[in-house]
Image (cartoon, rainbow over all chains, first blue to last red):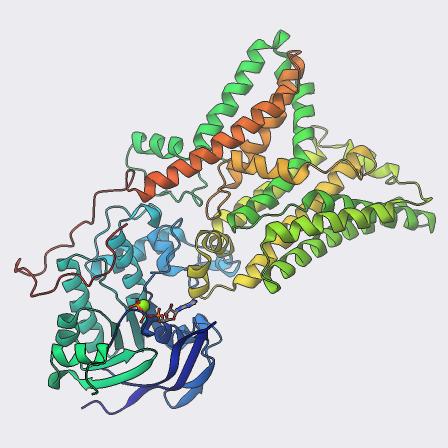
Amino acid sequence: MHEATLLTATGLRKAFGHVQALRGVDLRIHEGEILGLIGDNGAGKSTLIGCLSGVIRPDTGSIIVDGQDVTFEGPHDARAHGIETVYQDLALAPDLEPAINLYLGREIVRPGILGRLRFADRGAMRREAATRLTQLGIDLPRLDRPVSYLSGGQRQAVAIARALIWARRLLLLDEPTAALGVRQSRMVHDVIRRVRDQGVTVVLISHNMADVLALTDRVVAMRLGSVAATFHTAEATADDLVAAITGSRAA
Amino acid sequence: MTGPAVPVGRPTATQAPRSVRALLDRFLIGSNGAIFVALVVLIVAFWLASPNGAFLSSLNVRAMILAASSVLVVAVGVTFVLIAGQLDLSIGSVLVLSGVVGIKVMTSLVDAGLGDAVAIAVGCLVVLLVGLACGVVNGLITVRLRIPSFIVTLGTLSIALGIAQLISVGPLSQQVPGAMNDTIGRGALLGIVPWPAVIAISVAFVGWVVLSQTTLGLACYAVGSNREAARRAGLPIGRLMILVFAIVGVCAGIAAIIDMSRFTTVSVAGYTNTALAAIAAVIIGGTSLFGGRGTITGTVVGTSIPVVLLSGLVILRVDPFWQNIVIGTMLIVAVAFDQLQRERISRGLTGGPAPEPTPPTDPGIPGESSAPAGGPGPD
Ligand SMILES: Nc1ncnc2c1ncn2[C@@H]1O[C@H](COP(=O)(O)OP(=O)(O)OP(=O)(O)O)[C@@H](O)[C@H]1O
Ligand SMILES: [Mg+2]
């Protein structure tokens, strides 16, 4: 059993105008687990992920990482804690090439004095990106073109690669395989398991119950901005999950 | 330094291009390449058509370079702003305000008995600081009040001009010390390259280095390309915005110094069209109005075209008003081109092959019941 806690969120609330996206969410993420996060459209999954990745500031509530109360002022802070995210909308800069997207905000700089002047080393980033993408089994037709030239699935692959390259503690995946074909999805699943085996904790949002059951250790079901139920995957069926999502049966 | 090796906006490989055709393809696909060809054609045509090739006489070339220099400085700043996805309409007024303040400072220093050299140096510093301050104000308002920069700078356009008008009514002679005109205004480096041109080329070079070589440049492209993505990548969006406006402000100041030196004064009413003309030149040079794309080389070409056109038409005794018509047309064509290209890309017509299968890692057993989760497919 996983007992050590990596992250605890308590009483997270977030309103967008009149919309209560999160109505007091409590969430515990165990060290080394793959946690599934499910719920209908608009249940608040992405908002919750946004809070954990520093993109969204909760109105109230606290986030504790490694027993330490953290307040994420921005994505930068979450990254500093080794938290990486694949956002539902991918968050890539379409006019920049994949390599630059992978390293944006953490660019490789030229050696020596030019590096101290923050001269970017494009060549190094391209080479490094090519190696990493190959390691991850991601095959892009051309690495020297802007991301806008890539297909939806290829873009998703770039976003996933970026998160995988940098994640040290926690990987937050918001529907990472939504645009991927069957084989690519399976590759991503393999990578998720591999990353977990290397000690990175994973939170996976998915609408695909088969994937969730196959991949995760625990599942948290959200409904209308709250946590509706928590399952140990081994003890849950697809029907249980669907019931928790739709609220047709109290869990 | 200003060859096609500026691959940032339309990122291209600097490493070993696969073939000449690919290189050509890349060059001509960017409006950058097409516009460069247009410039060369114009120059050659005017040269051939002008009596005795007068168009390329050293006198005329010098005149064109002088005419282009202050516009180029402003346009370099505008390139940063546009790439970062912003607009600055206030540049002309900022130029006038910084110039007027600078002249005030210079004349009072001279009146106070200080030497010309000191007065000019302090005055120029003040010009740059006023430009910088205006830029920072534009940036701060845009960032803090979350108002589109288009509106903010439309406001400061009027405010800066008003302040300049208030300052410039007065008994003082509105002229820079004569020494400034003799040196910067009419002098030349090694007696060959006019100082305004030296200044403009230096500014363009620094702009090129920053935009195409540094992480700061990358950040500008990222912010203009997808602001939210840049924010999530941890880039300091607010500071970046303020910085690009500061850059264009300083550029306006430098342009003011050039014009003050050349014309001994700054015409308060003479810059109403500056911002729009600079934006047009930058866009003709291939920088996107929507942010995320553009190059300084493109801007150099884009600023040269109106100057070349005007000079050529005058030499050929064609009504120079044609210049306005041609530039307007080119602007629309450039934007239409940019738009068309974006649409082609998003429809995947210029893209590579459809989702490339990743190398098989397992036997091709069709997935369980795993239809891709009901998300949107590739657009
Ligand atoms: N930036 C925003 N501005 C306004 N409302 C928002 C914003 N983000 C989310 N919401 C609202 O908050 C609620 C929760 O949205 P959220 O994106 O978290 O849902 P989700 O569970 O991720 O749904 P999906 O499965 O469709 O991705 C929705 O009602 C949504 O309309
Ligand atoms: Mg979502």
